[in-house]
Length: 115
Length: 109
Image (cartoon, rainbow over the protein chains, first blue to last red):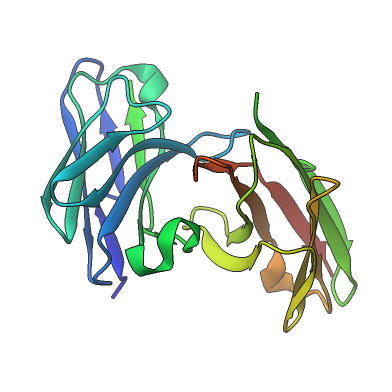
């Protein structure tokens, strides 16, 4: 089983719908992240959380919200999906004991298509 | 602005050696990562460099020159399974991780 699990893996939805992408991890890491990947672009950070009570905006947080329900769970919501949010979304974790230079461990990705 | 430049695509032959370059212009530097990403899959960690020089790890090596804002990933004895995208990412002075768009490596028999 994957250490970082994302659900759903694929989702097609319509403009205006609310969508939630869920991430759970068994690595015991306290840092969790949501990234977006688009063709021809580098990974872009949407939100990150360094512990359950800590939520921080990344470089492209507009149109997204997150919830850190537990150390192991971090969900990403699109309150009203729009077509330019069509992308591949990755959840990632890192170990705070490695500091800010620790490697990231990624989930398998959630491909979202907004029609 | 901050940017990471990598070639979009490279082609190499099975058994050969390939060098994937990464140049960066960031506000400060606190380290550089290389990740491998197979099509439709998650990126996986390959290497981390923070000091100048070459880090060797099996068939893969990563080099860093901080004064030149330059790194490369060297893959030896190429195998078909090395066909993937290779992502370069730099940690800037604010400990933000800046990602390149990745280099798609195609291995031919």
